Image 1 (cartoon, one colour):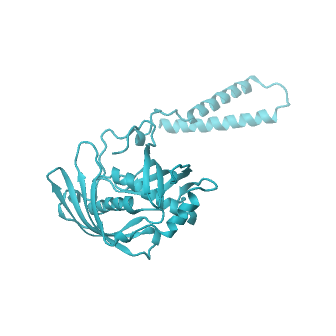
Image 2 (cartoon, one colour):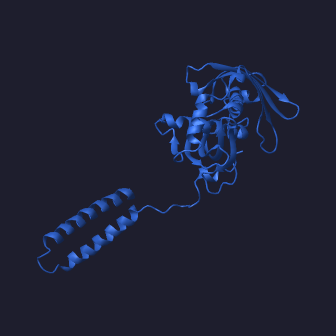
Image 3 (cartoon, rainbow, N blue to C red):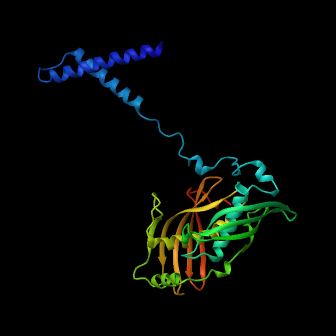
Length: 317
């Protein structure tokens, strides 16, 4: 009832003030105004002031960082597809999270060994997977899977691999241990394309610099694709090191690339890469100093985790 009366009074006040304003405008040249008009003018001024105060937004209650930066008081670890998957041993479903995650770790290991600006492997399929708990403390995954060379496109031949991936269970994070075997891997060697790329950019007329590879529409120039693949290989070193039983990393974008001078006849590049962790849906940013040549391969010389929140002091793991 009170709200109805309040609304009615507001409506009456609005009409009275509106009429008063019109009279002021129409009688602006008719001499001095009467006392009731001056009283009404004062009332309207006060009413308008109160209206503005009521409509003004309140200041924020807290200037603290948002919850995404502060973090939950008791954060829950990323969950796998099912609890049964996480605890299971023996044969695993090849398409489920534990098998796929372990295969991704083996893939990162493969790229650190054999990746280049013209060779980066992607997971095609997990054929068989099993898990067992080991007495030393950890879980070992045995895998049979196939990969393809992304640089060759969908027409490239599949490479069959087998691997054992060991996730140690320790107080402090320790990267997984990988033993990998791939058929025909000995045939992978430097190509004429890699040597031509090296000669073109090791002493360029102007340093290479780019941002957002690919862009928000998924586009990337052909000239930048070798630099993207080189970043993907370099990111594999980080993704391998940071992986655990609760993660599944993939590089989603090269945020920036800047070529640096090198006195060692190496292609030297500063990268900022964005890594996506599938279970937690978190995007993690890393800065990498990377060197490459056909003879010495890819080397990650410096790594720096770049938190999105100013108070953060250490990487997720």
